[in-house]
Length: 162
Length: 395
Image (cartoon, rainbow over all chains, first blue to last red; front, top):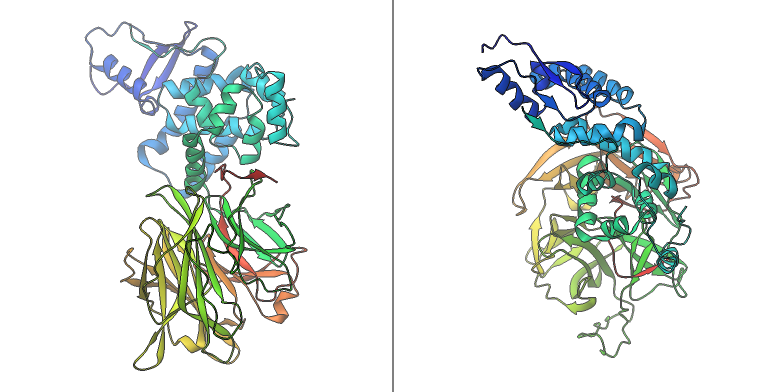
């Protein structure tokens, strides 16, 4: 295969096809390996699958395409400012529905920038939440016995289990 | 077919990711998060998480400034937002306090009864974020030596000995220490008594929970207030006296927290009689702010940075334009600006601190509402909130 390949096609876990440009795929090590496989293997008919659902993969690719020019060539301060603003808008999403999926995807695709951004977004959301709201979004059950709850309450007056 | 990682329908976030999210939370939210479930409660208490959290804070944001004027404490964060620090720990018959050191979210506080001058510091360690307080064992001249392997030396003039306090952390031994130096009071200027000649040094270690005596080993040296700890070495501004010529020179006294050895190093400052200096930190190195008179009503500030840990090489990084005169200000350098709490009368009524940008030379006053009057007794410390436990009680 020649280096003239500009985009590769991948499948989501739902079986949908997505195109990702070579420069964007470089933001993720595993995607980059996959790209090399596609470029250098003799059998190019096979479309690789990424075990990320379609809804999440759309967002991940959108992030990659936006960040690719800067990651590959460096950027001026004004570009960095613009990108920061874009990140904030990009992260305005539902936690349960998509943010946690993005977190998982960024972790497994070794995308440091997106992983940091998604973790910070989750942390910022938690700052304004009650304990029960936090449990709800993380799907966690309150497993303290009533004695343990009492003990913790004594240690932290003013805090609540709700 | 190539397959990478698996993500199911509803992600159950692995611990690695949970940790990474929790690490970014302020202490207040983390304390609330301990109530979520047992697993989180355990995780947030582990020493490795506590140090990761502190490390993340320190590498991702500038520390806040902790400002004290009399009974008022304020936290100025890196977004220039002011926060009140609500509970000031005052115990027993004490009615006021003075912050004497700040490290990894812990404060060392001297509590005393005003206006009675206290001969010996009564010290607390305090983590304002977790509200934990630990009282250090008292040191009093009357202590019969039951807990103390030393006696305080008597003062020849029948007054209490002046003392200086330092507080810092050493990553080498992973321990916090408090140092008190007791001095002979010698009048060396017309303005004020300067504590000269160290007579006794006592050191408290948080891990051992007790005081012990340490050799000072340096003659002809006096220490000024407010020590600074950089990479496990505590530094005091001070000056030395040349016994042959009876002249004085500016110096720093350093104390290696790990091996408990004191060292004296001259500092590159102008004539000691016309200037005031403060130690601080600049780009993670020890820095010296020297403030001295050029004419009657104008002053100049210089910033010097210690280029290596030995104290042998100092480099001048900045010299300010002429600025209006203030007397014995508290100073530090923070986010590329010199922060100064002036001691001068005209300024202290205004409840303002002064910020001098060292890139642009822009000088501006910053208002801190209800901060109270200063009288030269203010103090400024760096402060990064943390979960660091001190084995004390909750306030």
